[in-house]
Each structure stands twice: as structure tokens, then as C-alpha cells.
Length: 108
Image 1 (cartoon, rainbow, N blue to C red):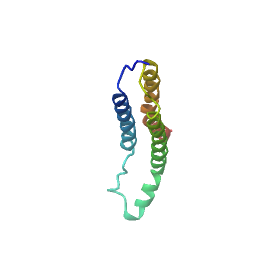
Image 2 (spheres, one colour; image 1 turned 90 degrees about the vertical axis):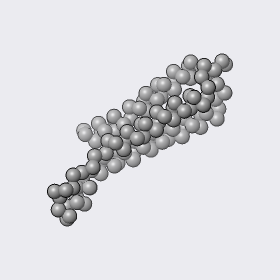
Image 3 (tube, rainbow, N blue to C red; image 1 turned 120 degrees about the horizontal axis):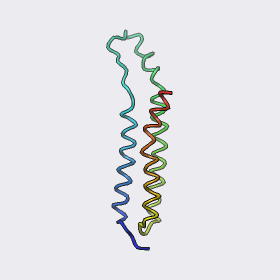
Image 4 (spheres, one colour; image 1 turned 180 degrees about the vertical axis):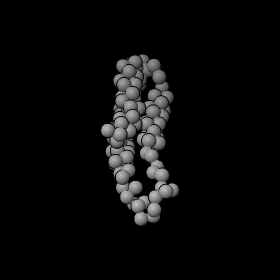
């Protein structure tokens, strides 16, 4: 098989997409405005945003498992062809969409 790209470049690009997707998950967590909230109600305000934390944790774990499996795949690859690039781009497209779906799931 003739490689169209180096394995290290392929892995670096993929790792970058995974890292950005995980970062976007944290950006979507909204910090509650607690300035006008009495101290006795702070816990209640924080409890009300638990769905954001649950969505974050779930999506982080999904992306993390995908990344671990993707990383394991590199032990078996000897080269990168166009088919591998295309399949990988489709996977990365799905990974990059996870933060949007995570944010949407909390809104609904």
C-alpha cells in the first residue's frame, strides 16, 4: 500500500480534532449567576445545572473511548491510503459534532 500521508501527521490531525471536541464540551457549561442569590439558595442553583454536568461527563467519556480506540488502531496501521483518510474524516466529523448534540440535549 502506498501511503498518501505520514502516520504521525495523520495521528496529529486526528488528536487535534479530538482535543478541540473535548474542549468545546467544557465551554458549553454555563456558570450560574450567583451574585443575587442568597447563600442558602446557592446549592439549589448549582443543583439545577446538573444536567449540563451529566451531559458533559457522558460526552467526555464517549469521546475519550473513541480516542482510545482510535489511538489503539495506530499500532496496526502500516500506512495511510485514501480510503483510510476518508473513513477517518467521517469519524472525525462525527466526533466534532458531539459537542453540539451535547448542548442540544440539555436545551431540550
